[in-house]
Image 1 (tube, rainbow, N blue to C red):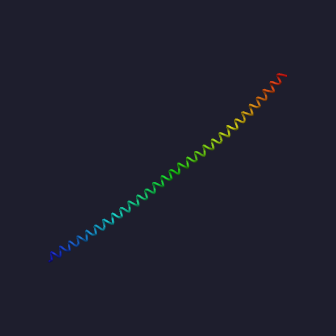
Image 2 (tube, rainbow, N blue to C red):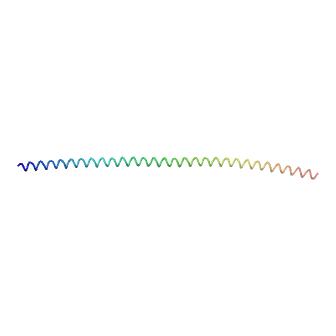
Image 3 (cartoon, helix red, strand yellow):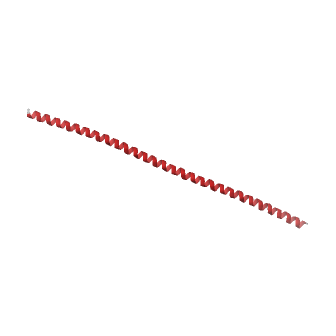
Length: 107
């Protein structure tokens, strides 16, 4: 009877220890899964934020470059127009001088 009581007590203690082990393991597994999920979410959010920032920077620099190119093109067009007008004026003046010189020589 004493042996039976001691054995039963030992078995109950072992079962209790086993239950505690199982509960602890389950809690740790759940915490680990939650931690992994939290780390994954945070990492994904950080990566998406970084990618979005990078794309925004690329778009911004591309837009700036396009705006600068457009401004440069407009300035070049204005310069070309101004030069063409100056050439036309000079050509007309030269033609006028040539005409008056020719008329003077002929008279």
